[in-house]
Image (cartoon, rainbow, N blue to C red):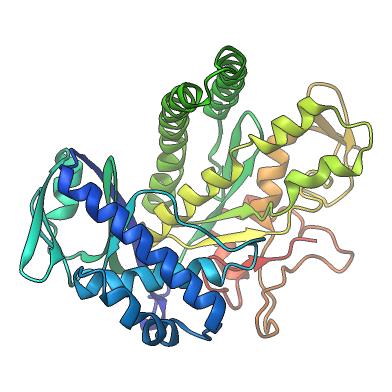
Amino acid sequence: MLEVPDSKSLVTATKSLSLEYTAPNELFFLFETFGRMCNDAMRIAVQGKPKNRLQLIQAAYPRLKEYGLHTHYILSACEAAFSAYRNKRRKSIPHFTRNFVKLDNQSYRLNHFLLRIPVTPRRFVFLTLIGSAYHSALIDNPGLKRGSIVINEKSVNIAFSKKVRIINPAGFIGVDLNERNATVTAADGWTHRFDGLGDVAEIKERYRDIRTSIQRKTRGDRRIGQEVLVKYGKRERDRTSQRIHRITKEIVDYSKEHMLGIKMEKLTGIRILYRRRKSAAKSLRTRMNTWVFSETQRQIDYKARWEGVPTYFVNPRGTSAYCPDCGSRVAPLADRKLYCPTCDKTWDRDVLASKNIMACAVPQARPSKGSCEGERGDDGSNPPSRWREGNSAVNHIRERPEPGRVCSAS
């Protein structure tokens, strides 16, 4: 019998909804004014060096009030400026050039697909949104809390949140992401290879050639070239995102139906591996930089959290080097095959990796604060035959980490 999760298992799940609309002329004045407010707030932040957003609001409020917009725009402009100011990766003073406005959930009204936003006190703009039955189900759901909205020239992005109870998993699913496939293995024996990522890689290769051709033909007019690149860039994103969506939805739906947690590799920094090879070709750099593992993991993570499915990230080191049955080091063969001399068994490389990902990341009995180190055998190998135990794998878990933390598998 599964242990019922306590109140501490309640987490906040968020989802962003994007709806198209036709922008009225009055909205472009709002875009331009809000952009100037953000840039003014950024200059005040650079000069005053505020420690928090409240200090920036206090310093910038008199200047931004002169624009005459609703007070909520002052708060949103300071929030956007302070987020950009505190970005540790920035190399210069940020300058806001894109047309957008941001509002908190207290400043707008949304009645089905009719959105009302303020411009100045007691003056409003009404936007008619374009949505489907899926959008309507979220907008009209009284159990969802509406968050802030971001409006740009083409779409309105609305944030929704809800409290969900994380399930107590009876086992786990290991997800091994590769450039052209995603292979999953579940504790109940289900193994599947999703080849849709191969279509994504081919789409990116095709559109890379298209972009090269556009840049060559529009070399004399950068404005036209930029417009065409934006058009084809949107097509590329739509086609790749839809294929990734189908894969991630099927993985999360299976996990929810069978009460399984999801484990993935933490692949942070993997794109720079080509730098270790001085002879790395340009094509290798391009393939690594266009690999969609980050977007795939992001979709799995937020969809799983929305459904109450826990997700864990494990150290990728050694997941393709050891046999999941006996823990012995395997030898590489042709056609992405691996051979275990101890078991005298040949493995598919991706299936072996997914089994090891699913088997590792069992936390220690008392992990140190801020960490959740994975547990292996005394010799550093994977526990033998753990993946065969099916739903009884939950008996090995002494203290489960919070979803989303990183667990070591090395």
